[in-house]
Each structure stands twice: as structure tokens, then as C-alpha cells.
Image (cartoon, rainbow, N blue to C red; front, side):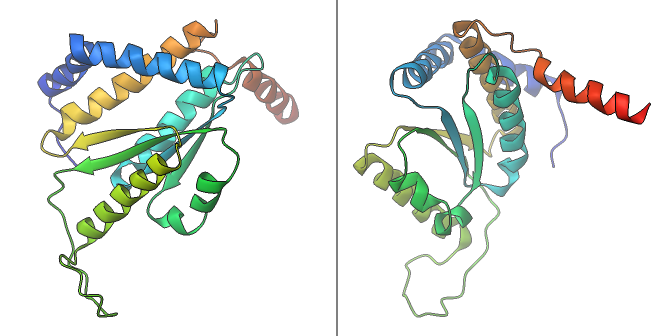
Length: 205
């Protein structure tokens, strides 16, 4: 856990609004819009290779679902904790219906690491938890490229944790707002859920 520093928070926000990253934001949103409208992509899968980013993943899932899931529009968000999900749902991702766009999330420059004992005598050059996860991360990207599966990679620099994480939050919100604008949707409400709230209140009253 890190102490919040408002100066670093402001730096994180400003980094998204800089010229180069701003162009990247608009370009990424435009590409996503093209995938959704032209390639029948209706699912966004977050492949999260750092456990500490899972909370962000669930927040982003809520952001996409509540903002875009309206008026028959759909960009269903799925969270996958990797490499754990390599052994379950990855088969579907690689060889199932091609209706998904993937974002790889990973923390880089992570100082925390654990040595791994080589019980199976595989003679790995570097047996540590980070090295094994890095190998699985890079191998998955190579396989995605070979299979022409659409994806992007977002790396969070542990050397600047606050700025990087705030930049990711702001980037995600702005990207979602741009997509909603393109679909003529209000990203700030969830009218369909109100029906459940009303029914709940009526049952409790």
C-alpha cells in the first residue's frame, strides 16, 4: 500500500492529457469502436497477470457494464486472473468464438519476487515466481499474435505506482466516455437497474 500524494495524483491525471497519450487514447477508442461495429466484437476480456490489479479489473468491469450496456448496446466485460486461467478458460479464448477483444494487464519493475524450487528438475535458468509469470505472459502474447486475435497490452510501472495507477483509472474513464459518446449513450446512469431497486423497495415496504 502506498501513501496518497496529491501531487503524484495530479501528475497521473496530466500524463493522460499530454499530447502523445491523448492521441493514443483517441486512437485506441477508435480501434475499439471499429472492432465493435465492424468485426462483431461484443466482449472485452481483461487478462490480469498481477494480483494487485484485480481490484482495478473489477472496477473496470463495472465501468464498462454500467456505461455501455444500454439500449441494446453491449461490450460485455470479463475478468481473467492469469496465469491461473491458462488452465481453464484460455482454451475457449484461443479456439472459441472470435467475438472477443483482449487487454493484457501487468505490473513491471516489481521488486517483490519469490524463488521457486525446481521439484521436477527442469533446469530453468531463472526459477522465480516473476520469471515464470513473465514467461507465461510473453508466451501468451506470441500465441495471440500467431492466431491473429485482437489484443493490446497495458503495463503499470511499479517505480511510479501512484502516477501509473491514476493514469490507468483516468485513461479507462475517458476511453469509456468516448465509446459512449460514439454510441449516443449516457455513461453516467444505469436506468435498467432502477427497476430492481423499485421492486426491492416495494417488497420491503
